[in-house]
Length: 306
Image (tube, rainbow, N blue to C red):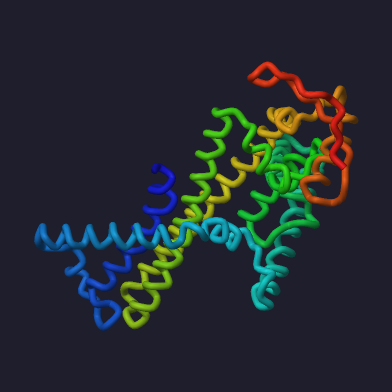
């Protein structure tokens, strides 16, 4: 219920309330009468509140299946259409230039305390970004990609294919932290979209009233703040993905009835074969290790998957 309210209902309610305020002022049909925004009678207040609640609930239900798409658009996956693909390429080049600028700051030597702090800050920011050659056009996309392409790769696992399986093996405490951080990320993304939509609605309704263009300015500012919050939450989520692999990668092997590796070399080889299996890249032979079940039965070892 908490996720439904914060992620879906509240952003939709803000958008519906803003559009309803523009409608009540008559902004879409003529000069705005801002004195008509606030209801004068309790019955009118109840009617307005019910309208906002019902419309926001319906809009939230309609948009809920598109949550992943809402995040991906802000990440910068724009290659499907020629116009946006060109924009994505230009912005990705800017992101790569920023990456190289941070790398130069991180590699500088000498200097005093200020230089040391600059190097430390540059290294911290680089750690939250993917390599230069796979930069996405937006900061949000790079914050998430840093986790999606490095969290499991350190151990030989492909993160994109192994994460859904490993997520089911994490502890209850870890799962709660991951869900909470993801809720913050999705809420910030939806708030960004809600404020952008309000800005567009305001520009449509108030284009002929320059003295109230502050509506659009406020909307853009709030959208920028929400986007920055989404980037911060994405960086935290990517960091938690690394922690999840650090603590629970062997739980994935146990869940798949595979033997635990004795050293890091065997671990990497095992996880690379497992990643190939997840990606359906060909037949792989895996030796199983069936442990005692809850019923006290032990299965034979040495079964193979061809």
